[in-house]
Image (cartoon, rainbow, N blue to C red; front, side, top):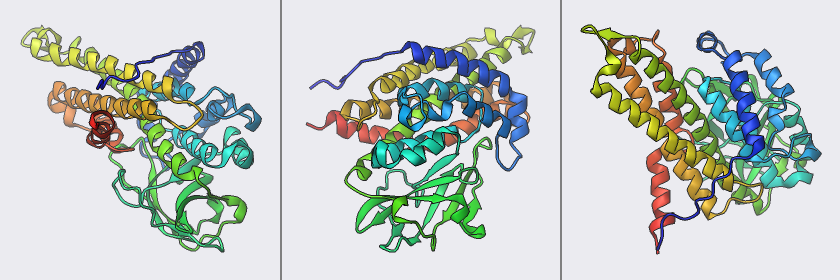
Length: 376
């Protein structure tokens, strides 16, 4: 039995164009000084930059044209995510994109057209899924009854404070369902901000108990379970793409330091003990980028098949492990200064810790891969 599987890798002209545009935009709008300015703000991002991203059509890249999107598919979001990771740009774009994908795949284009049109127009959205810290836990304790009343708490809801729409994974009549909650429906005390290791990120614990949704705001049916599965995989893919970009930026920071810092009369970049790990980062980065765009090549608008699942899990494990290694080496290479808040290496090692855990860590995905690839 072969464990290599599908090795298709496409990089379209549209993806290349988006990569060029997104890299230039993110570089101009999010230099490291701007990133640091946003760390202590409530939102974690610049509203003016978000508005420009909306005007560029990024919130509708993967959505059908009938909903106001570009109809380019989820694969076209990957180069944008990579560029955002490279610039450490924190906005609700990925949360909004994933919320739209979940609605599209669970409800279909016709049923969710109004909500998707709002998202394409720039309304921030997010998905409330986790009820504990385990991304491998598929159980849903949050419920909605026949009157539309929700009961339950969701943890680590990404960009919850910025979101106008919250897509809540619930159990309805003993089956998975989605309840769409608007921000104004939440009581004032419903949202408790989380303290995250990556301060470019924002998340909150949200108590939905007592919130009522209408029949039109409830998505049920057989497609919901598959859509939630695909949401997890696509989230892993976009997190991997972003981590790949952050690794590239971290590598640039390392190389710049090795080329300027002198010790004992020599540039520290001349020492093999520092050269070799730097090359290891580069080769692992190239591997990770290949995994990411391989997964993007297989991720279509329909339900993700076995090959796409394998590719998404491989991309997540490789990309986030690489960023963890790169962030660790960046701190170590900078010596004592690397452990201070003022050193940019801190931003990368913190991003690495967040990226590793989001949508399941490398161990979780390799465990799933073992079942997919090695079981007979």
